[in-house]
Image (tube, rainbow, N blue to C red; front, side):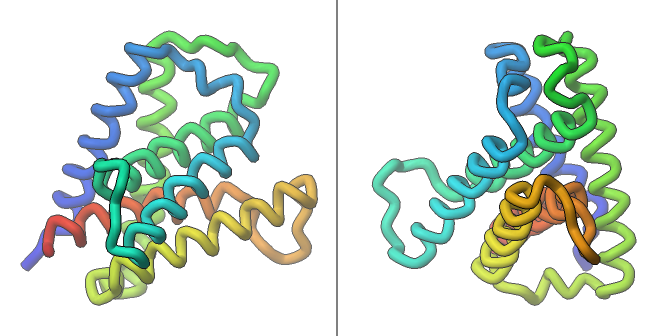
Length: 179
């Protein structure tokens, strides 16, 4: 029987390792990006995955797994940006960047555990392509909220959608390993 907690932790560790290495290489240059720019980066990654799924063709050479990792990390960056705001310190020390990464990935993990309990691991029976479609839907929702300057009538804000993108991307990474 699969151990979701362990699988989730392993995929988070892979994403975190890449985030840390890129932060060592580039610093927190992403701090200059506005939230809509981060949303668009996630959109680009999800669109590429869907294009590869639809066409069966991959001309760049990198598979879809690095794109799922990138979506996790861009969504965490968006949550950090949302917390710190544009006026905050632009260049974060590595230790602070990693502390914030861990904080937001922990919140997403708690959400996953709660939803996974209530939905009885239904994601394990879903197609990766369906989860990609859900990610694209979440991105469209985020864009609508951003276009309305964050005002919603009944819906949660962008934070929940970013966390869902993190979790769906991690689920996809797990499902890809199962296949």
